[in-house]
Length: 260
Image (cartoon, rainbow, N blue to C red; front, side, top):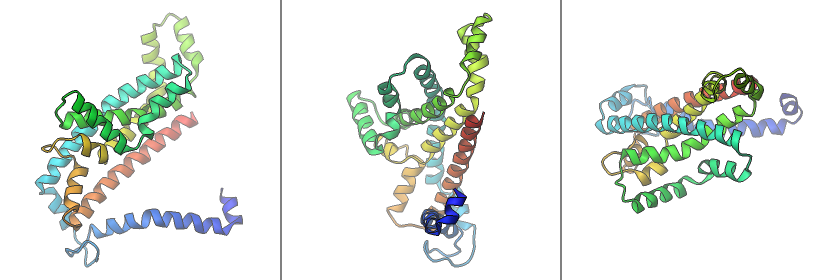
């Protein structure tokens, strides 16, 4: 790739231009979160006061607690269900239709999935709250976990499992002692992706949440409606840092599973 870029300098310009287009707004947002003035767009001075204001903002704290509850619960459930689904698809079926159907929630637009889940809750007369958001997040997060774990399963040695069972181990013992340890990096990567997706997901939460339990992205949306302030910049910066960290770790774990 580096040799190709050295030959074609226009490709370098396109690459750097793409990175600039993606990351300059993010760096600008992060810089404005340390703004000493009240203006969200004019940088004057350096201050941590907006981060201090966040700590004492009851709306933000309430939204953060709700978000962590939903993200933690959905991560646990989607990791367990996604791993089971990946193992089932890998071992017991080779149907392209079932594979595509299992990964469909990751492809379907969020607004379509949110409206569909809202219609389902209305049909079942389910009152909306944190638990409705939690199960909605499980639906689409599970698809990402399934994709990551299934990719790892394609590189595992099936003869180890067969040897374990030939030596008298049960299916459960083989899964716990052979299959599960080999899948551990992929499961962790899938869990981190699920947590990140749930942490900053807005559209599905907007359609499936109740009025008394807003998640943090919904709180940010309600604050932005009255104007952007450096406090929102600070909150967005913290969310981005957490998301970037989780994504980088997940990518690292995924790369390790591919190299093994």
